[in-house]
Image (cartoon, rainbow, N blue to C red; front, side, top):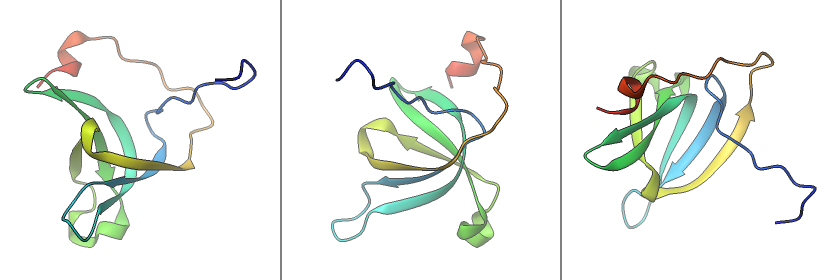
Length: 93
């Protein structure tokens, strides 16, 4: 990677569209706000609070295992910096 390019990080409170593997014919597209990362049974998963695009599921959390993510589109990032949580308890389910 060229030295002048910064690596992007997922930021809590940012809005993303995550495309992940679904069925053979259709991927799963999740619109929402990034809430963090959890570990479930040894696999990491991105936590997305689903937005209004999901109608009845709005406000629910979707855990998307990182190994099935195909793409992440950045829609918006918060202007203020969000304090990073360091509690190990928050990382494991």
